Image: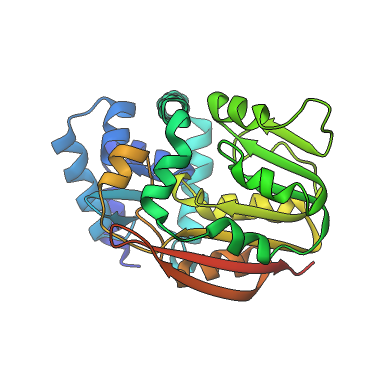
Length: 305
């Protein structure tokens, strides 16, 4: 790390405020503008200076760029020092409170979007997946289990297919309308299916509650997919099976504007790295071409401990 440009960049109070935010979460330019109430051109200039000296890193995803604080051994000491500095000053605490408000509104907008999509959800999936029987591919990789969790269950079509394969099936979703439609598929007397409201980053399941878990075309909606995978590890027992499906990297911006995707797919190596870091061993990978020049990746893994 070249110290002189770093310290020069840190001499600006707005850049310090930006770094404080990016140490806590990944943000795009528009989100930073809303939090700090500074012009977009000004924020972009500050981000450029901070990127050039290595204080922050950017992730390009289609037409959008997302920013986070630099990580790695070269920056660990400095970032730890700055984090403790930010924690003690009211200005930075106020910015982080504002960030929570902005991100909470983003989440509310996402829930409203999925509530509006719920009535036509199954038909929309068919328009993308075409003839791919993705549910069947997933179920084929789920062993007979006591408890299976479908994380991001939508309107519950996969729950229905899983119901005969486990003693208990748990579905989780953050959209009230998706939850309502999922629950309507099952009799209230059917104790083998339990549909729960909750966020992926804070799953409403106890540690090691599930024997198998499924994340079916959900990860691209999460701000931090790696953290989502860590949460799956928490709720799975040792040796539990995890089946993950998502899009391979693509450039279809309509998936962001129409369906609220945060990520335009993933590089398979990134998914494998996140899984490995979370303590999973990969046992099977497969890719399926679908409509609109998209490809679905399917990864089956086992929790090591």
